[in-house]
Length: 398
Ligand SMILES: [Zn+2]
Image 1 (cartoon, rainbow, N blue to C red):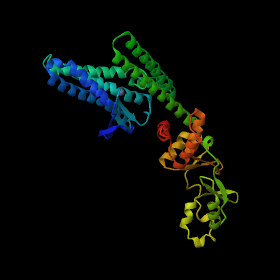
Image 2 (image 1 turned 90 degrees about the vertical axis):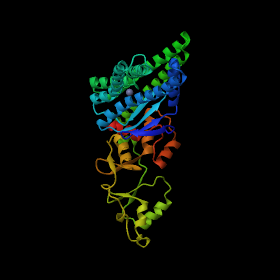
Image 3 (image 1 turned 180 degrees about the vertical axis):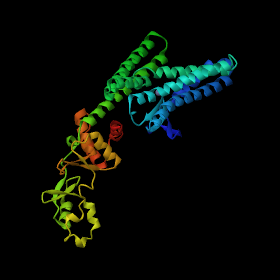
Image 4 (image 1 turned 45 degrees about the vertical axis):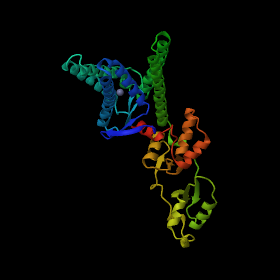
């Protein structure tokens, strides 16, 4: 994503170009330029450039169709990117109902079909077999192909999203629906790869065959990632805070003086240093070494931890049975390094940070994440690039 160029924004949605998109642009210019040669070299290539840009506009309008319907449902659209295989609208979360998910999915192909019909009609109005009429006719066909191709019923295509919405409606289980639509996408993707190779071996359509192989490969890869994200979402709902929490904190006597606490803190080599103060068998709250600075040193001998303790009711807490999805969401929303888990009796049961969450998920889902990486996550407080749990948790709770 970092290598994409931002070329502007529409309706508040940033617009990006993947450098590989210029491959499409080049191929389109070449294709139309050759096809229009009878109009003379200059006219042919000029018309080809115009057609390539109109192809760009067609794909953009298709993606805007998805995006604007999503926005009308109150869903944020993070970006629209044009890349090697067309366009992609990065829609932040799932629609609330299967019906609404269907509307977002069908909006893109609907735009393409409407463009096809308008252009088809337009081609009849302009003088027959003039360059403009040919170009409008070609653009109409392109939009029809964009619509029909996208309606192939497997994720990541729009048809797959439609299938997902239908299965979601029928079964009431969104996750199961995504798994099935992703499975369909994988089967179709492998089918495309086989078809592409068959074209390569049986016909002279080498470039076209390879193109189909590439499309199929892209489809399989994306369908798998839909499947994985869904498995992750299910896991985040099944696991709870007590599965992931650690007891990496110290309980200290709330009656001790700030001087004693300072000495203890300076000698304590455990990391991270998390302290809870208790007295008379009750947790009084969390103690942060930073708060020592707010009290003049001259008073450290006389003041106790009671002066600086943050009562449990004032710090961010969750219960042991809070789902992991909600834990992640709360950490992100309130920008916390960690959160305290309370037992039903109101005692401190444990603490959770991002490293603890990743460690548990790695163990449950067999992800290859080393202890070194987990230590880094614990220290730096951000998730690995390939595991954007903040975004995934947000779309899970929905
Ligand atoms: Zn689409």
